[in-house]
Image 1 (cartoon, rainbow, N blue to C red):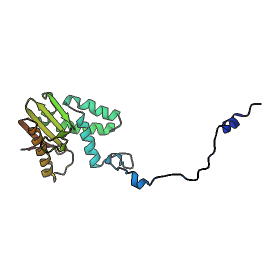
Image 2: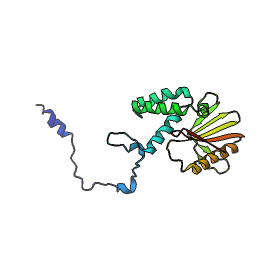
Image 3: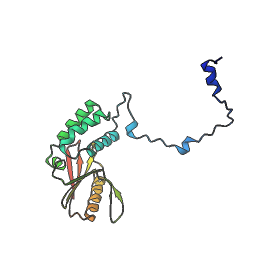
Image 4: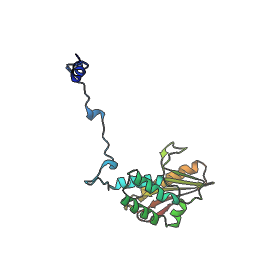
Amino acid sequence: EDAPESESEDKNIVKLNVETYPTIDSTKKVKISATAEYLLDKDGVNHTPRYYGNLMHSLLEHINHYSELDCTIADFVLKGKISECDGERIKQMLKKALNSPLAREWFSEKWSAIKTEINIISPQSEKLQRPDRVMIQGDSVVVVDYKFGSDIKRHKQYTDKISSYMKSLREMGYSDVRGYIWYVVLDSISEVK
């Protein structure tokens, strides 16, 4: 007679006696990165300044022109990167910041090329640099670095960084290079000479 199904399944199981079970010391092989992206408060909301800055950089990285603002924010909401409420607040803040004629120009369609968060290797020093936004029109280039905090104590450091980007762009053959630090939340733009 046919054996019950459970008995026939047991015939296919091989039992092994394991004398050793190899493991590794995870403290020597595995490093856990506690980036702000994963540090959430008790409600699952991340409000750390670092997370906010990274989020805003990521958002602006996807916006070449002002007309793309609403769709990009909607996409971030749809993908769960931001809540609808945060999306609306961010949209209002960015629209206000883009009321500045200079900032509005950066997001206009006048540029033949817009590069966001791309690497530049300085021809002289071979140093890797990553400006937030580079806009090109003919021989003219504008480089912008975004800041989303309210602390401008590191302004000199930011200025040096933009100056370095500008120098690299000049070394690449661009003669008309302008640089700016955009303190978005403070609604302030600082030109770097």
